[in-house]
Length: 184
Image (cartoon, rainbow, N blue to C red; front, side, top):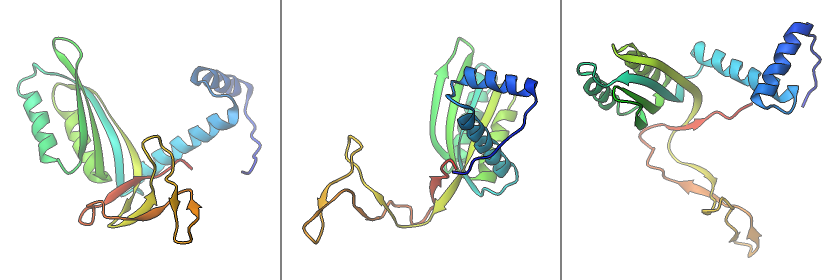
């Protein structure tokens, strides 16, 4: 890890230190790293460098709004290829919160989210989108047991090995398998 030196005016540094305390960071370095990661990811998504993404669309809507619940449900069915899961919460007698987990081509996910948020009666809509890598077909990864521990197996040489990797057909040969880009 490389060290850098920064110069900040007193007022900005005081505000930043307040931010660090409110967010519970133990030091300035980790806060700066997180802010840089967020801004770089945001820039990547805004510049359309990310072809695929996974995300969370959240919004509140009035379920008494004429035909709105039906239109929202129909839109989700029309875009079933983007849907991972939906959570529906009744907030009060009129308002519902929906959280929709989505994946797919960034432009399609954004289009679906923007159309949903633009529906009359939908309020507080927000899409949080994360760039994702795409793996096509078969790939390997380590396996863990239910407790998250690596398998111990005897190799061909008769010795124990901490983990094992082998190819799996995840049924994604025909459609992309998304891997979320890790924090840098």
